[in-house]
Image (tube, rainbow, N blue to C red; front, side, top):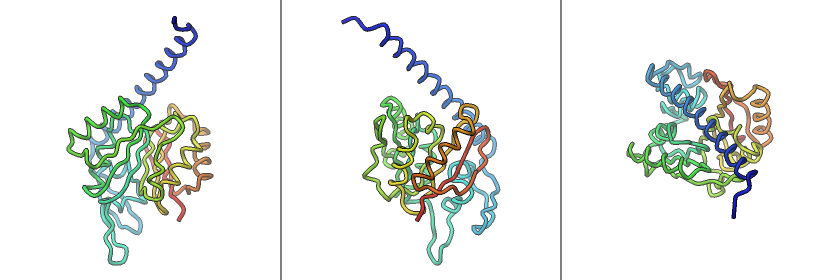
Length: 234
């Protein structure tokens, strides 16, 4: 049967949108990689955690309030470290952040990377395998309507959503899924590209996150981006 011209046009349009999104993601990865290469450590005032020098990727991914997770802190007599953490990464693309996250969580932790594109997940697995970290990463194929993480309910320690929420058809449903998967006190770093997402649109995303039960804790500085650090209410 001959394909309808209308259907063909829509398919081409969708492909152009997809290509534009991937170019944007690529530009963001190049920018972050340049930062990592320029300066691997930043001095951070950790507040009650004290001043410390952390790898830049930890500053970018975990932000100041959660920086102690990387450095290790004491709560009474217990040392808190990122090893054993469960990290959720929606929209990981080819896995640039996934590799660093997998290193941070250690051998006893895991990163659940969720994407709707099988080709992206295949590329992510190759990147993670090359880094020798495949056993720490759970790569999952999601649907357009769900992350497919109901089995993680109340277990996620940290979620990174980097330049992905504005692509979703229903941000509110996404934030509800993340909140349900997160344990009480879990952190959620939301970052959107400033040149692509308007401030009013980012504010609308934050309002949806708050309605889902997440609390705004900080506005970390990520150049050319809108960023917010949220926390799951205990």
